[in-house]
Structures are given as C-alpha cells and as structure tokens.
Amino acid sequence: LVRDKGIFGGEITTLSLPIFKNITYEPHVSMYVTEAFSRELMGTGDFKLGREGTDGYIEGIITDIRILPNTLSNTGIVVEKQVFVTVELALYKSNGTFIRRWAFTDNAIYRADVPNVEEYNKRTAYGRVSDRMARRFSAAILVNY
Image (cartoon, rainbow, N blue to C red; front, side, top):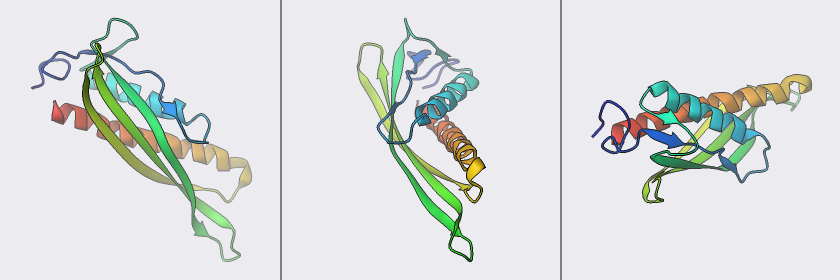
C-alpha cells in the first residue's frame, strides 16, 4: 500500500501537524511532543509537513501525565521519579474523513534528588518519552499503510 512517498495508497504525502492539545496540568509538554513527532515524520522522508494545501492532518492530544516516586533514599527522600505520558493521535484526510486512531503510553525515570536540576531532568525525560512514542507512531503508520 505504500508508494515511493506517502501513505494510504500514496494519497497522503503532505501532512499538517498542529501543536498537540494538552489537557493535563503539566505546562509546555505539548512543545516536546509536537517537536518529536514533527522531527520523526520529516525524518522518514515519506512526508512533507505544511499548514495549507495538505493531503491530510494529524490531531494529537496529550491525555495523561503521571509523575510518581520511583526510588527513595534510606532517609525517605525521593531520589528518582517516573513520568508516564499518554498521547492519542488521529489521522484525517484533508476533507475531514477519519482514517485511523492510535494511542501511545511511555515512561521514563529521572533524578529528583537535587532540586536545582529536577526540572531540567523532568524536561529531558519528556523529550525521551516523546521521541520513543514518535518512533513507534512512525513505524505504526508505515506498517499499516
């Protein structure tokens, strides 16, 4: 079903990928997720990303983020935390015809024992999780179509 370029029998070669909607209480996560998915789709070489005149579009929603303690020190202080991110994606043709829906969940562990660098470590974890989900999405979209 995959031609030289695109998916869905070669009908979709250009995609619009708006910023992912974030319905969680964690700010700025949509930036990491949208960037990872854009980079991965462009890296395949099968798509061009644009805003207008595209063959289809992807709607992405960050539905859940959970941060849980992972490792405690012997004094009971959290040393590592684990972040879980859930993303839902839907692919549509440019006329609004629904094609397919996906859901991905991934997690990463980051250091939380030094308060000055905990936020940096958390953002790095968001980047790692986003990259892995984007790779899985890219593989799924190319295998299915």
